Image (tube, rainbow, N blue to C red; front, side, top):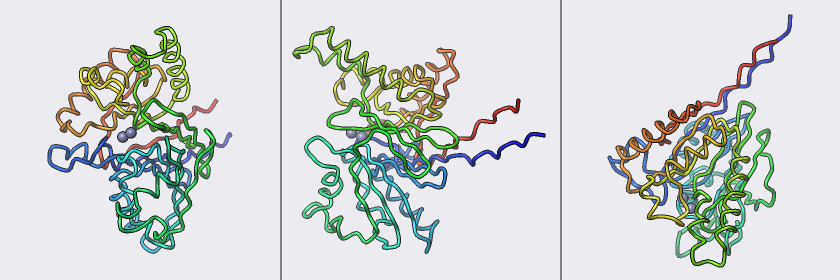
Length: 315
Ligand SMILES: [Zn+2]
Ligand SMILES: [Zn+2]
């Protein structure tokens, strides 16, 4: 009789901040949440946090409760320097505890090193405590490679279409992969941007085609894709070049890359819960009409998604 290998426990994704641009407290955002970008991944013994928007504050509170006197050892991956992706870090309690180890990783930005991106917002007169004064064991690492590992989790990075320098990450756990692209505008932007630029329309089309193909390849077969879908299709038309995506561009990217589950993310601060519901319904319709088995949901603060190991039938 053949022994069946034990399945790894599922990777767990928890959403702590799903809003884009600025936190929006209040009843109208109570279901999808008002905190800015932060998600947590637990997989293969690693604790990985993606982005440090205001959602990292309640994550810090929850970690303190869970670990009590035990040390917390985590990696924090930052996509880019915009406020909504770093503004919560000064309020992340585990950074103030000497027994904790925190590795912060990200790429240099446009006109700022990665270290500056993390330390400058905490400098006087912007904040009373400097990063140097935080008592946890902290390591700020500038990424230079597009492939690296955090323990047993392999990470692939790709630069996406967003003002300045912005990375997307795909994390390969033993039970499946999770792709995180919180801010990204579809590459068709180049077609609009070509007007009045030195770029010829043919050259613009070629860049858009190549960059899009590169991104589809990067995402191909992801179990979960957390993707910028900030605008309705109509809103996108008046926000071309702002660096964010629309519902239908998000669905078509997920379909083309044969993703299993798409989470609409980076909700616009002016969209209340009902509006996001409507956008999710529309996205589901598009997915159903495609005939492909793509699942779609709106990313909800406090929500958890498990990535289960695939049960391979014994031959
Ligand atoms: Zn953002
Ligand atoms: Zn941004």
